[in-house]
Amino acid sequence: QVQLVESGGGLVQPGGSLRLSCAASGFTFSDHIMSWYRQSPGKERELVATSSRTGSSPTYSDSVKGRFTISRDNAKNTVYLQMNSLQLNDTAVYYCKATDWRVFWGQGTQVTVSS
Image (cartoon, rainbow, N blue to C red; front, top):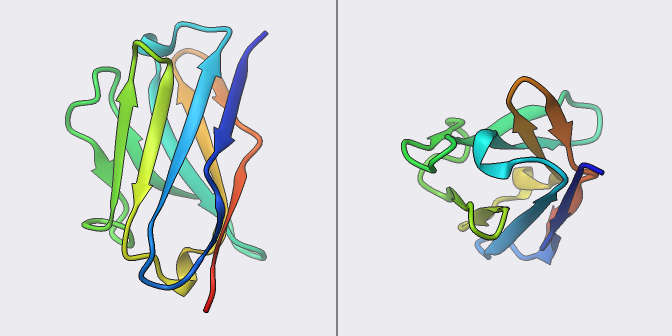
């Protein structure tokens, strides 16, 4: 059974940090490109960051570049999103996505940035 389980979301003040985790099971994690997306109420889901199969050459949306870092541990079947200098407009549900010839999504974790 394929599972992607996100964790680490929560409430944080502006300027704070959170680290999201996405634990994968039921498929060959290292064969899949891993991405983080986010969706705010009334907005379309947007791509935040992508990690290649080996974790080299990550890519980021302009809105998070320099603040967020995606990483993965293929031995632990886990992808992470370190989020620093959080802003009010980072508030969203964050989803991880696994892509190969199939696509899998997690259920999401809420991140709320508020003072």
